Length: 237
Image (cartoon, rainbow, N blue to C red; front, side, top):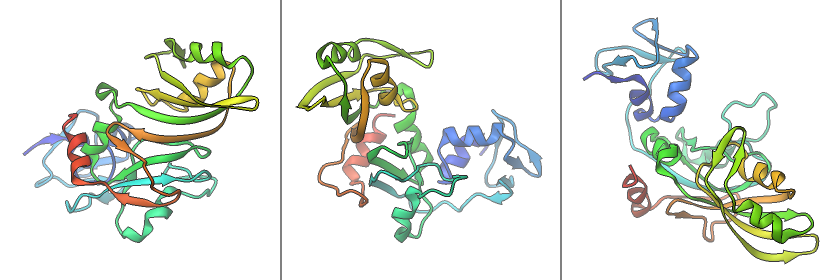
């Protein structure tokens, strides 16, 4: 049965649907020896689909992992600087899984990893409005008015953000520990929001995403998602 290429690729567990679309647009995907185009359909039972010259992995068991990402690790799969990658922290699985979304090198906390592209798409697609909460350590003067500014609609990188949910968890010398909840998850969003409000982020930790919570999972450790957690996210589709 013919399906859109990005769906076939993501269903194989190779990458998310969004990443598959980017790969097709970059000319990295071929069907029966011809460079694929966005919007193209294929039949995985009849057509030879290659990504970077390699066949798609055979459909197998799906894996769903929650990692407590430490600082100093990147979530990009290919890093030209040779920095530590989060896949090193789950290498004992012996399976290829991929980060869902990103946490920058200096951020830490909850990171979902999976080989289920459709599942990843549910978490990442803006239409699902997955709430993401970060513990955010900031420094700056006149914290009160700046917190109020963070709660207002804000334009970052020419994009109008939904108002963030911001609470003060603790006042510390020269700054505060905040709980910041956002819905878009754009590139370095919390850091850019705080900078625009006149605050400097000194530490950033994602503690929840949708129905998932970091809980007591220790830094650098991972666990499988429970069946309940998996179904809660799939039901968002």
